[in-house]
Image (cartoon, helix red, strand yellow):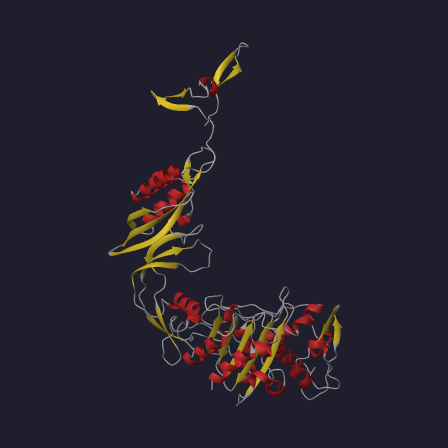
Length: 544
């Protein structure tokens, strides 16, 4: 609006008032040619107000919007926003889907266009009622087409945890609460074991309806179809009744694993029982981060040489006591491979190469292999990629069929090979037991699911030789420092996996002691023996 001009509604007609600058009604008309060649006056397009809303406009718009929302007038409230359709639908759902019959909204003192407000909602579901208080905020902006102050619509206005496509719903939870028990009947809670929080949530979602409990009634944030995130509970109207679910975890070993990985900013570890495949411990740091232990997908580096050695020995391409090349360099498929610090072993055996983790000892054998040999051994002997049914979400490893240099790199755990601590603990367990036992966290008696079975197996001779190689590595090779002081039947293997863009490689370690196998990864930890090794050793020491 021009400075000096004023308007007023008189008899329903908008007129111009002459101001101090002398602007008058003629400022609002323009001369256009008439049909007969003359001119006719027509009203000009009114100017649209620009700039941020004034403090008064912000206050009044927020007040009117909140009043309409509280009065259960979604259409009226939505008309005060910049997205009437989305706002009206969400505001109607707030009462119909969330069951909020009454709501009190208390605006606070804002800044600029933002207005904070408190919410006290009365939730009703059948005979159940509850009061729920929380804080939210809205922002008043100027509509670009009309110039009017409006509320900038966002789902988070209704609740700060709402995102695009989300909704608030009050209903019985899909899953009843559970009391997860360890193998000896001790309850495992997220308070005692914070690193198990996401695993416990997964167990509840999968087994809540099978454990005999009664689901609670909850107000929750529901995500749109196709979004795999679980619903987030905001308010529990009725607690429900937990069912009891048995797991294979060992509370003592779980605590030891959690303590071990907590010593690193980022780390993950898993322990399994070789004789059964039962998962004994799962640990991740940070505790509230991604479940790398079961779902991570990293290149395993030289820990992969355990699996590769089994393949080479089964094919007669390597034998612990026989001479085996370990040059400084070896080129295959156009790539030049080398050993750490470019070491070489002259006139050495395969056992010496394994214990020192010689890369070229494996790369030199690439020309004698078919492209799919490693993938077949991974699947048929070690069960990698067989769709494990552990009882929770897990990544079961992958060893793709590759060619040329990428195939050679996969022999030493690079290229397209991807593993996590669960996979590597299982590989060590397979060596210890001599055959693959699919890892499980929930006994199959709970749901009668079918476990994966490897179609093949190592020969007993290869299994015995591989255990000897891992024992040598644990007693006098690259794993010896970490495994020092551990008695019993032991074996280990270190690994370091180069990752583009990282200053230091990921550190890996996999080992077994008697009937416990464990593996750990420390992202950007450097050498596996000094980074992941001590974590695995702590777990094995606690395993007895």
